[in-house]
Length: 114
Image (cartoon, rainbow, N blue to C red):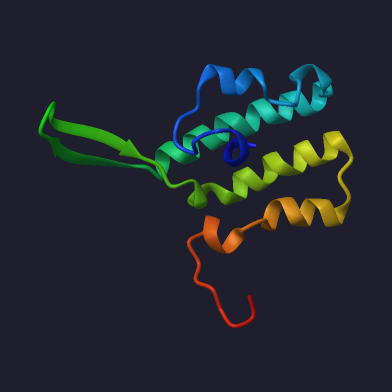
């Protein structure tokens, strides 16, 4: 959804308003699981992030936090599993979601088998 509807860099409030999934559709159990996984994911993102510095001609020294979501794939997969359960995805559909573009998302190299 993010790739299809945004500039793939910024997430704006208007992007979220058009998101085609409503939280009110989720079961109470899945909402609790997603809330817990959200906390785990944010902690994992933070743990796997790095503070970087650069110098800008306009603003001088800048420190920013760089994130590496591929290092949190295990938690992201669990989120996907809960969403798949909620919407009744088949095993084949879940396999597609979890492994979609994996060589690019995980920073792997193409092989002759790809």
